[in-house]
Amino acid sequence: MTDNPVPHLIYRTDQGEKRLSLLHGYCWKIGRSDDNDLVLTDRWISRNHAILQQMGGEAEADSYHLIDLGSRNGTFINTRRVSTPAQLSHGDRLTFGQTEVEFCHPAHRQIQQAKLAQGLHDHTATATLHVRRLISVLVLDIRDFTVLTRKIDENVLSELIGSWFRQAGQIIQKHGSWVDKYIGDAVMAVWIHGSQELEKPEVLQIFQALDDLYEMTEELQKRFSLPFHLRVGAGINSGYAMVGNTGSGDRPDYTALGDTVNAAFRLESATKEIGSDVALGRDTYGYATQHLSGVASLFKEQKVQLKGYEQPTLTYSCSFAKMKELLRVSTAV
Image 1 (cartoon, rainbow, N blue to C red):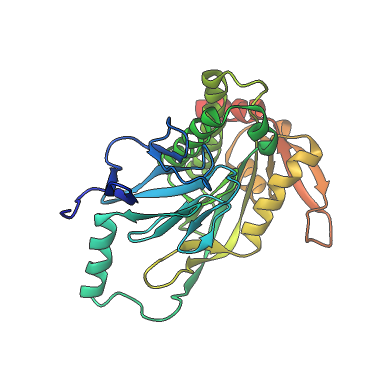
Image 2 (cartoon, rainbow, N blue to C red):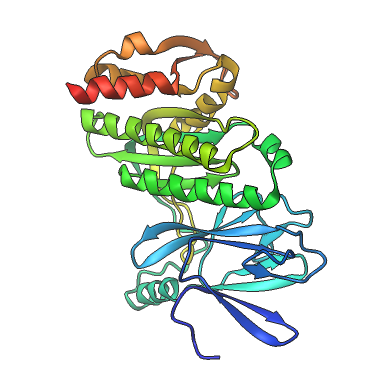
């Protein structure tokens, strides 16, 4: 076959090599059942095994993530089992049961070749270059995800989760960030700030992103008529962290590392214990009170024992309804 200029999957059947184009659409279901986009007749593959999700990204090289749907025998990328949404690179070998599929993205390959030609390709095992920056981290988690997987049809689950991840990525990108990590049933977004503190537009941008994520989740609840309320919780934390590339030369992975990031995850987990939708770290709350009206009356100060921290931590919690009220008042000023 001639080289395919669009993103595609290559797989082999009894009739020979076949290709599935990834040009049109944003979500492709993979499994043994006939209603999948990529039907693999391997008995080791689940009826609805995994989904391939286009998350968006740089205009010349959209991002594709592979999401396992709790398959019995697992999903593998280059022999590594994946349990959380994993971003794909050109040439990755995907294994479902005993079937191997190749992911091809010509734009990714062209970027890699351009880096080689410009001498930008790093031949070391890892390329780690970090700078210390002021950041804000948002972690948003789907509540009771395990229960959800047991109570709804696999086809509905794959479409629901695919839609949620795709729209979450679009919303976060719209509000000036990117999805740093897809982690199981959660997303992590990072905003990098250019000054020594957050300005009002930056605070509003983060809070508006969260409100839009909540509204998107509510719309999916109505669209799919789920047997119970699809809920999310969020932790937001601001502070200094090391930001840079922790990946290898051929697989860069720009991320933020440090206590600011860890605390955001812990704050999100704490919302379940304190019965709240949103939990802010102390510095995020401080920037919010500095720039926005009515913050103190809408947030509740609480002490929580975050996992891995010796001393109780101050957090400031509120509901999504109060977050929406805060945005209404602040944007009207």
